[in-house]
Each structure stands twice: as C-alpha cells, then as structure tokens.
Amino acid sequence: MLKGVLTVGGWTMVSRILGFARDMLIAAVLGAGPLADAFFVALKLPNLFRRLFGEGAFNAAFVPAFSGTLAVQGPQVAKQLAERMAALMTLWLAGLVILGLIFMPQIMYALAPGFAADPDQFALAVSLTRITFPYLLLICLTALVSGVLNGLDRFAAAAAAPIFFNLLSMAALVLLAPFTPTPAHALAWGVTISGVVQLGLVLWACAHAGFALHFLRPPQLAPDVQQVLRKMIPGVLGAGVTQLNLAVDVVIASLLPAGAVSFLYYADRVAQLPLGVIGAAIGTAMLPLLSRQVRAGESLSAHRTMSRATELSLLLCLPAALGLAAAAAPIIDVLFVRGAFTAEAGKATAAALGAYALGLPAYVLVKVFAPGFFARGDTATPVKVGFAAVALNLGLNLALSFWLAYVGVALATALAAWFNAVMLGWLLYRRRQFVPDRQLRRRAPRLLAAALLMAGLLLAMRPWLFPMSGPLKYGALALLLGVGGIAYFLIAHGLRAIDLGEVRRLLRRRRKPAA
Image (cartoon, rainbow, N blue to C red):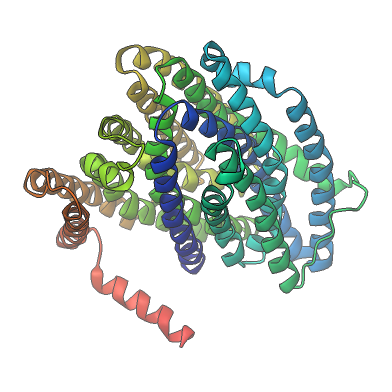
C-alpha cells in the first residue's frame, strides 16, 4: 500500500504545485472580483458533477467489483465489465451535458442566485459554464479508466493526468486570452481542452497495460453491470450529499458581497494541497488492497491496513492543518498578493484558509474510513451519515455566515466534515470492522501534541519574520515552514510518536528494489 500511496502522492504533489502556479496566474490576472467569481462558479459546476458521478461514487462501486472480478474470473471478464460500464456512462453523461447546455440559465439561478442582481455577471457565468460543462463527460470517463488502472495497481498515469489540467489552463490564459472576450473565457476553453488530453493519457496507459478499452459499444445492462449500479446509486446519493455541502457554500457565497466566492476558492485551493496529496493518495491506494483482504477473509490484515492508513494520515495532516492555520496570512500573501489581487483580498482569503484548515484532518480521515465501508460493499451507511452532515452544514452555514460572512461558510464546512469523519469511524468501530491497534492508540495523541507545539512555534516566529516584504518575504516563508516541519518531526520523535530510524529503514528498503 505504501508504494501506491507514494506514487499517487508524488504525482499529486506535482499537480498541486502546478495548480498553485495556475491559481497564482489567475489571481494576478482576474483578481478577486466579479470576473473571477463568475469563472469559479463555471468551474464549480462540472467539478461538482465530476465528483458526484465520476470519482467518489463510481470508484467506490467499480474498483472493488473490478478488482474482485480480475482476481477471481481473470482479465478478460474484468475488461468486459469495464467496457460495459464505459459505454453506459458515455450514453447518459452525454445526455446530461446536452440538457445542461440547454438549461444553463435556469441552473445558474439555482447555483448562484446572488448573480441575478447583476445581469452582466449572470450572463458571463452562463456563458463560461456552457464552455466548461463538456468537461464533466470527459473527466468522468477519465475517472472510469483511472479506476481500471488503480485496480491493476498502476497508479502513475491516473495520478499524473491532472497535471495537464493545470498546464493547459495556464497555456490558455497566456495564449488564448488575446483572442477571447475576456481572460475568463480563455480559461474556460483551457478546462475543456484539458479534459480531452487527460482522457487520452489514461486510455493510452490502459492500452499499454494490455487493457485497451472500447467505449463505443452498445450499452448492456449485464448482471455484473447491474451489481455495480446497485452499489453505485447509494454512493451517488452519498457523494451528492457531500457535493450539496459545496453547492450550499457557493449559493450562500453568491449572496454575499462581490469577492466572497473568490476568497473561498483561493483558500480552499491552498487547503486542498495536503488533502489531495495525503487523503486522495491513501484512499486510492488503500481501497483495492482492503477489498482483496476483506474478500479473502483476512480480518486482521484489514484492521492493520486501516490502522497504518490512519496513523499515516494523522502523521502528515495534523501538522499540515495546524501549520496552515498558524501561517495562513504569510502563505496567502506570498502566493497570491500581486497584480489584480490586492492586500485586502489576501487578508480576507487568509481568514477563510484558517477556517478551512481546521477541518483538514477530518477530510483526510473520511478518505481513510470510507473504504472500510466500500470494500465490504456497503455504500448505504456513508449516505446516511452524509445526509446528517449536510443538514448540519446547512444549519451552520445559515447561522455562522450571518455573523462571520464568508469565514462562517468555511467554518461550517470544516465542522460538518468533523461530524462526518467521527461518525464513520465510530460506526466502523462499533461493527468491529476497524479496531485501532496498540501502536495507533499510543501514537495518535502524541502526534497531536507534536503538531500543537509546532503551531505554537510558528506563531512565535511570525512577528520576527514578518513584516518582511518584497523578495525577502519568500525566504521568510520558506524559513518559517522549514523550521516548523523540522521541529515537528524532531518533537514527534522525542515524544516517541514516530521512529525516524524506522522511517530511514523503510526508505532504504524501497531504494534497494529500485536499484
């Protein structure tokens, strides 16, 4: 599992770094005003459907079925299952794209009702979303093929595909902007073009692995397809609950003063770095392994897999969360404050980042706990927990946004994520499907203590390193985060939360096979 985590995490880290470069370019050109708000809403809608139909729900149902079929019935039967699902997904997602293009104004009234007060901004959001909407078909098919690759224990191409989203978005903003009505239009076209490239990459990787897939076959509701769909439907509802939380955030942010959507977007992008690198990597690598262990009846191995995944998540995400919260202002200042993105917008975004960061460990733990249900074919329980979480998020959004504006929106999302993670973990424990081992019980509180001490150190250093400005602030931020990271691992080692010698031995074992 660790090899898969490092592969996915490494490529995801590259993608996230390029994503920061893309967002820095967008912030410098679009700033945090009506034009940026319209583009981020246009990007939100296809991403919402991608997460709803493509990644979470589909992978939760398809990857265990594909992995089990591959192990029991062989590659030919597994390939037939993948091709049948691809043909079916192509048909109904194409229909969804056509309906979306036709009824986009009506959809926009529901997604961003606050834009209706400004006809020009509303028309711009509709136009941009019509350009980006075909991306959902392309990226959902990319998710399907990526699921096949993950089931084959080939993680690199699927994890590397998002790199092209960032590269082509930046290229479009630089090269296409002179030929489009606004720079936001160029960005929208870059999003859709990147979907074509990402799908082509994973298809090539699948063919290279001996699993060339054909999408254009007549859809068939064969028994294996029906089984995946039966497990997928509750997952779609569960993913829909999660995405409804995000949609609620956009709806409420659109009703707030101009710039709120952009503040939340930029803050969320920074918070997504550790979530994508840690959570997505662990969840992606863990699900096929856990599915095989559950199917083979290896309960002890399954408990050990979840314990090590939880420990690894806490080891990495606790310092990331508290570090982001403690250093939010200088991070946002260094990343985004330039060009059209003002210092006032930077302060507003930093406040939202501090709120989002509080929920980061919960987001990652959901990625760890959810496979515990999916590997056993249980997609219904996360749905029930999700409905409770969305109700809580909606109530908190309405209450907190009244007092804290856009910061309340971010804080409500973080609190709802903690509710989701705690409930999933408690249900797994109550069913004896996840029993934390002695090592996890001993190390978890010590990891938290080490992260808290590190955050205190960062807060003490900030007044000394800032207000450095100009080029010096880049070195100051690097020094702040570097000292914090070293301090965390040294404190954790001193508290016996980690064993640095054990880490060195593990990395040495990884290098030997590569050599």
